Image 1: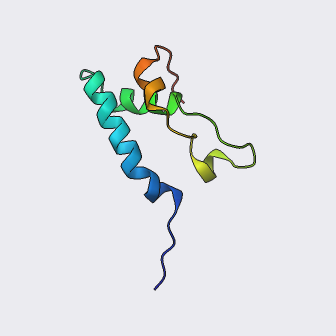
Image 2: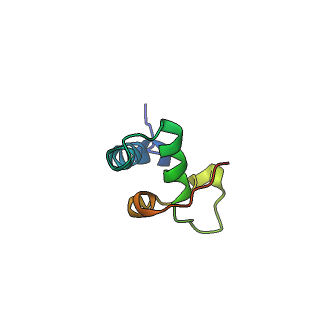
Length: 73
């Protein structure tokens, strides 16, 4: 049986690592706060894809660590 690789399974290790870095920088943050910071600091992808196809965008861990503005959805 052939299984193709998809974006979610390929992104999971990267996002987990970014969350670990962010948690190290902000040890008092909850899981939801970490998620919000990561999602709020992504760099959008081409307009030809919806968020359902590619997620919120390309992760920018430096922006997530350094930003003071976050949004929840």
